[in-house]
Image (cartoon, rainbow, N blue to C red):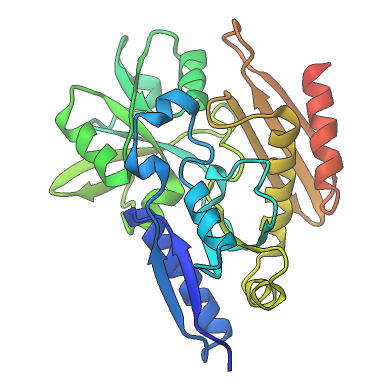
Length: 305
């Protein structure tokens, strides 16, 4: 009999929803396994102002990693894009669930869409990458800062004189905020949804991926994690994380990167906003699906050429 597994996660609604997806996947593969979810308050949850001081990388993962290494939990559940590209010694990403829709979406009060936003319209986002992408495509827009979990952000949109906010599609989907006819309902409010084109709005590395982290010497948990692992998603995540590691990028670095696999061919696309330039440097490379890390170095070299 497998011992009870203790999952560790943040306490936000989205984090809990992601932990439930992991629990469901493990129990489908191993119905005899008991699972407990332990909520861990992270630095980012306790001191939101730190996000402005030091970026988001690690603020939502460090305490969970410490609990993992201290053996207080058996498996850490993370949003992959929150994990620093350099991980704590003794911990590793053992598996990932299949990637959800990777796109960013604009959630607005009016149905006009991005192209029809009025001059000077106010858009809110907590991402430096998204801010630079919006200003690149529409220099006339005013982009303001946005913090909080997904429900908090939607409430801020309702209560502020903003035209729209930008969110990850995957977060809306995992919270059960179903998009119907390009609209969503939230707390008696109706908002309009537009999926932003990846050609311009390349997502963050690891976006829409749920990562399962274990101790690097815990072979039993590695075996369980492997039962629910989506190999293509894991290969894409490794390529994206290696690109960010080589770039030494984090959430405060305006960079987008996306790996996709089709017929054993990986395409890796990067978008980097250099200081003082409105338009990004962009490039795409491709190769074998198993060569993600060499492709990451190749992509970086092309962008820096």
